[in-house]
Image (cartoon, rainbow, N blue to C red; front, side):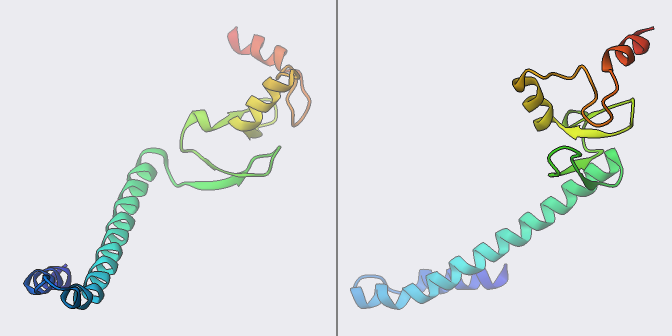
Length: 127
C-alpha cells in the first residue's frame, strides 16, 4: 500500500497540460492500476479465507462429493437446501437433479438411487 501511495503522489505531481505530459503519465498510471488490482485481489483472498473459516466453524469441515445422479461436485454440510438426502439408502442428490425430476413428471415416489418406495418411508417418519 505504501508503493501505491507513493505512485499516486508521483502522478499527481506530474504536469498534465500537454500531450507529451499526458503520454509520460501513462506508464505510471498503468503501473498504479496494476498495483491497485493486485491489492484488491489480495484483500479479496483474505476476505474469502475468513468467510470460509467462519462457514467451517458453523458447519464443520467442507468437502465436496459428486451428486449421485449428475456427478457434479457439491459441497456437503454447507446447508440443507443444497442436497436432498434419502433416508432409505443414505444417498443424496443435488437440488438441481431434484428439480429436474419434478419437471420431468417422474417425481420422487421412489428413491432414484436404490428404487425403494419413498411413500412408505414418509409415512413411517410421520408416526
